[in-house]
Length: 135
Image 1 (tube, rainbow, N blue to C red):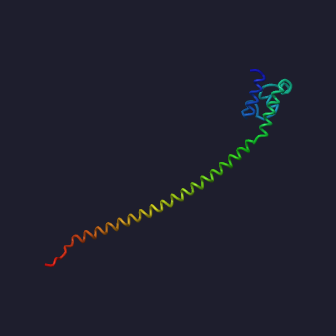
Image 2 (cartoon, rainbow, N blue to C red):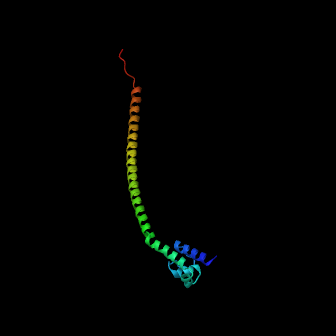
Image 3 (cartoon, rainbow, N blue to C red):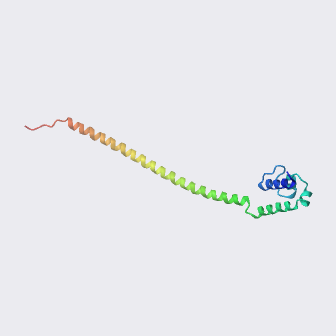
């Protein structure tokens, strides 16, 4: 692998935060160490690659930072969570109301069943009574 290819590979690893040989600081010393070359060679012989690296670093600093994007995403997710939490609370309240109505209806059915049983019992008792017929 050529030195230029080594430097490009090191640049890519550093910019992606996947450094192998360093702590991934975005500076000339770290780039040279990551590429396995002397820092003086980076400045003298591969200045165009170092300038390209600095341009990438500058774009990273000027773009919305990862923290800003994460903060925005976290805020959006918090809002979604609040919406879902409110909806879940509403569904639980509806479920509890339905359960109460079910219990009331079940009690009414049991009461009506008991009333029906008593009426049938009274009707059976009336059928056993033989009416007296006048002659």
